Amino acid sequence: MSIGERIEQIIEDEKSQSVFNKKTGWNTGDLKGIRDNPNRSVGFDKLRAILDAYPTLSAEWLMRGEGSKWRDAAESGSLNVQIGNGNAAQQHVQVSRADFQELYEARLRDKEEIIAMLKAENARLKAD
Image (tube, rainbow, N blue to C red; front, side, top):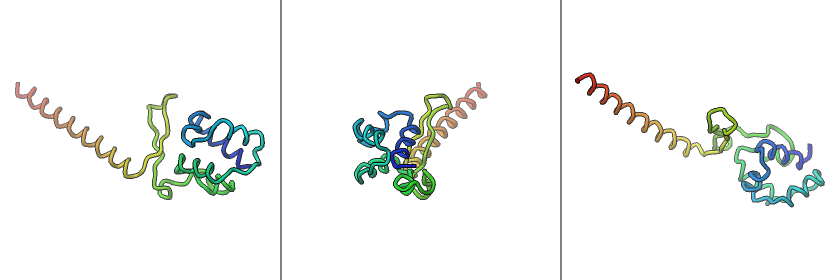
């Protein structure tokens, strides 16, 4: 598989060329050149833009076609998190472990506050 074909796979995973372009800073001309000649070389700046936009993407896979396409979260320092309720609108986003932990802890605090309010309301209703 050529590097152009691997880039096409990333775009297919994204399900949108415009989203890929926005994340990487690539333009339609860049992709047209690769589609016209999938075996052509891709500059370092273009490869770096892809790797910066997709932190769990394996550089080894992208550049040489070797190994797994995605690095595991422990290796990359980020997590691939699914957002949505299972319908077509769900998305996968990359977040750092620290950001994920911060969001998780904030959500946990919110739930604890709701539980405390419900317990107080329950006690008030029992007293009435």
